[in-house]
Image (cartoon, rainbow, N blue to C red; front, side):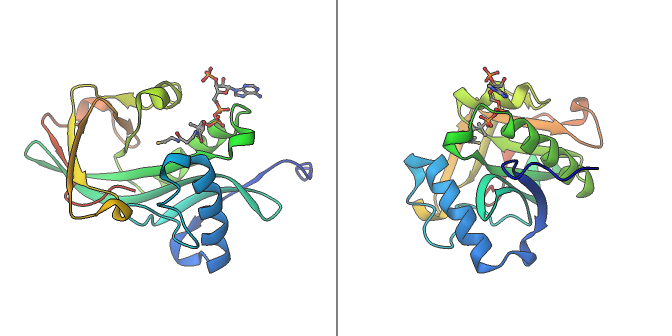
Length: 191
Ligand SMILES: CC(C)(COP(=O)(O)OP(=O)(O)OC[C@H]1O[C@@H](n2cnc3c(N)ncnc32)[C@H](O)[C@@H]1OP(=O)(O)O)[C@@H](O)C(=O)NCCC(=O)NCCS
């Protein structure tokens, strides 16, 4: 196999315990640009806003982080059932590179990471505009699902937030039919 061209970003999947301070700073810098409305969440080396991930998929161009996603396994309650999910969040591509296919590569590696984590489902919440991006990559929108979680830390993590219309699930080692009926309670923060 030939080496990628110098300008081509290199993807790695890394455990949180392997992230050095520099890595957190580089991720934080990219997240604050990709989420300008929430740049107050991403300052210095604080590279997470809700639950700290256990794994990250990171693309770098040289030392610069150009794409990122975070994942963490957690139990959530759906109706009366406890379900293990990979909470997926902080999915972002550097603004100047959006629309060039990096997002698709990122989600393919998120799939692989979820499979390695042996979870039945991936779970994420997103806005109306980005639902089609995830849907094109096999994530299923559950439009009726209401989900309650604790707010992102920088905005006051003790507050409970309930939202509907933006919850997506991806079956990993199962089918969507296995997703239980009922309201989602995260019982904590999401990634
Ligand atoms: C959402 C996001 C991660 C998608 O990443 P991306 O790199 O732009 O995604 P892709 O390039 O793979 O695909 C996006 C679009 O670009 C198109 N595209 C892919 N490769 C392309 C290329 N080589 N040239 C031009 N367009 C291309 C895709 O077809 C797709 O178009 P469509 O939406 O009209 O179907 C990115 O836009 C982003 O970081 N947004 C801000 C943060 C955010 O909202 N994150 C999600 C929060 S949960």
